Each structure stands twice: as structure tokens, then as C-alpha cells.
Length: 266
Image 1 (cartoon, rainbow, N blue to C red):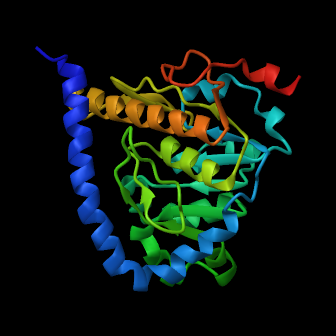
Image 2 (cartoon, rainbow, N blue to C red):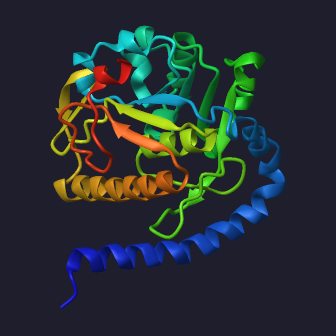
Image 3 (cartoon, rainbow, N blue to C red):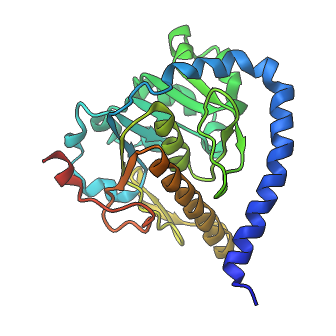
């Protein structure tokens, strides 16, 4: 009898291959409309080649870290981090948002732009309507970039080409790692990636948390898919000669080698 876990993973990945054929055709049909937006991303290709960056998740472990070390570093923040007072210390260089629950919030965009001053903001192509939002001035619109992420990654294929048909991930940290790889970073450090929200939904901006409303099976399944996608990214990073480290204390995300946060700066 085949290993049920490996069998499930393999059948899922084979279904992704079939899905990607249709998704690729849809991309080709949409390309004339998408091209002028996607081509803007080429200015980030290998922009930071050989440098290091820090991708900051929203885990409550951040509240125990001395984030002043990140001054003068290239920092990515994600999703609702702007709701935390930590945003004033982090001063992110880049900001990534892919979760639809965040993007659909009416007050999200004006709040984000009022509390951050990033070099660029990366969103899903589904929210190109932001470019017609009267609350956003032209300077902010020039800093908004959109990825057409519809390719399902697998052990055989991960697409980081943000100017074409990119991979879609279940987790915003995965999407941000994809962005960092596209930019050519040689070292990527993860912070606030606790990866342990199995029962309680806790974040740096809401450390008390709430009980997850999803069935435990769905929650664990989502974490399993995210963990697999991190494995794909780690494998790709080795091909690209990029080192990814997890500097989050007591993190459950053991795909990447762990490193002690403060030792990075010694």
C-alpha cells in the first residue's frame, strides 16, 4: 500500500500540472491587457543582487525582538502589520499583500499609505482597481505593483517571474520570498514567522488573538500546503544560490535552517 501522505501530495501536484495548462492559456488571452502593468515589475529584476533582506511576518514573537537592529536594512512587511505600532520601528522598504481578506477591506489602502512610506507596494493583479481609487494620489500609484500569480507551484516548477506568469502561494510569506528571489537577494532572513496558528489566531498587531473559526482539518490542511510550498521555495533558493534562514524563535517552520536573530548583526 502506498504511503497515504506521499500519495496525497503526488496526486495534488499532478492536478496542479493540469490546472497550470489552463491557467497559462488564460494568461495568454489576458496578456494584452496585463502587459503594461506587469512590465513595470522588470525594474525590480535582480535590483538587490548580492544583498540581504529581512521578511517580517506578523507573528507575536516579534514583540520579544529588538527590531532596532533592522535600521538601515532592507525590510519587507506584509498584510496587517501597519496596524501595529511596530511599523514605526520597522519602516519597511517594501510591502506585500496577497490575502483577499486584507485587500477587500474598505479602509485598508488609505490606512496603509498613511502609516508607511515604502519604495514599492506589491499586490495581486485582482486589485488593479486601486489605480483608479480617487483616495490615492499619482505618486502612490506609481509605487504600486501587481503580480499575475496564477501558476500553482510544485516540486517540478516554481515561477518567480513577476513580469509574466508567476506562482501563486497560499501564504503571504511565500509570496514575499518569491518577490525577494526575483529581486536577486543573496540572503533572506525570516522574522515573525511563528507558523503555529493551529487553534488561536494571534498576531503582533493582535497578541491576545481569537479562536480560529475554521474547522481544525482545514487549518491543518492549509498549514500543510504552506509548508510544502516553503519546501519548493527552499529547493529553488539553492539553485539560485540564495540562502534563506529562519530567525524566528520557537518557530514551527523548520524548512529553513534556524539562526539566532542577534547573531546576524555581529
